[in-house]
Length: 175
Image (cartoon, rainbow, N blue to C red; front, side, top):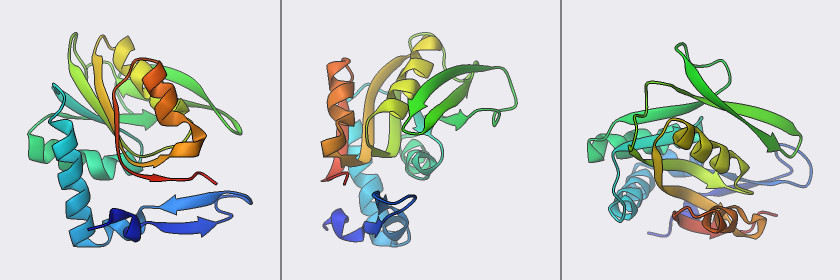
């Protein structure tokens, strides 16, 4: 099964000049979704993993299923002010400003090896912020697994240069 066939490309979304890679067409097909989860699970076996984390919100779709299959705790990395208990926070740069992601302070314990899953990597800024959250929590990033890598935007390469392990299921150009 070629999972790329299940990704819809939408021109000029969310703004002019962007070619948006839409995963909703992949997850609405039960066989494509199952294959995606199976591939992520298979790739995750390369790493020592104590916990699974995902970046809000599309990462949750994939990571929660993987967490269930691997019988590993699931950690949500959320936008600012979305978690009710004490949090660690990391600010990071976006194309159009700054954003913040957070994790509950009690989600990750010292020396936990955490696999971070997300739907897509572009420049890698959000992924790097997620890694910092894990590290602030005294955990270790086992690896990143992305469904889609926008290869010409350099996110995977930036993560690799910073010493992180990275896997992805498919590549698309970012523009």
